[in-house]
Length: 260
Image (cartoon, rainbow, N blue to C red):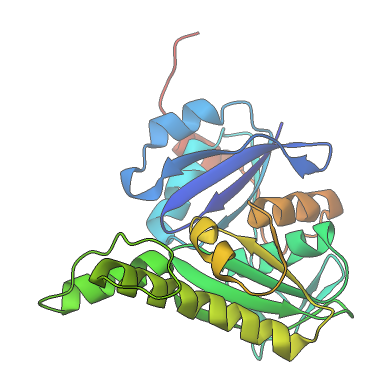
């Protein structure tokens, strides 16, 4: 079976690829990484396409968890893939998750796009009508903004406020300022891209940010997995780490065993 994995800073999300699209999505907390649990969940995988922005330790854990005969493809950004041109000054430096999300966004929506992913960090990327990634922004995610104020000020709390046009308590003042800052940058990028641009919003904080947007938008979760499915279908993956016999032996020694 074909496995799709999005290994982020907060969660490792994965799904089986079904008819060219991700199926039901499951997730593990990255901080509580359990190789045995991953190996159990993934034991039917014959091929895997994945992004990992959570560091080398998590990458190594993913490869240990995959079956020894699984062909593992780790995705990195490059100059072109699936018809998308990457105009980053150094294309390989674009985050693999941003790249896969752009490819997934184009698979789901035509025309100029603002691809906003509100996770641990919020990324806001622009894809023009000619299928060119023309640039984007990275800012602290909503939770990081809230936590930063609580950590680095003596009198401000961990805010758990509610949406309000005119906040009248400290929690609401913090919550709405941070949420509206995220929404405002998304709106600005859309204005730069033009009135025909569609905003695609995804990520854990999308539910909080979406209602604060003054422009039309479409909520689409798991854009990275959609992009990985597209890359898998196109067989257009830039880096292939196929198992070889000596790797098989090393990985088999590390893999947990399960009863038949």
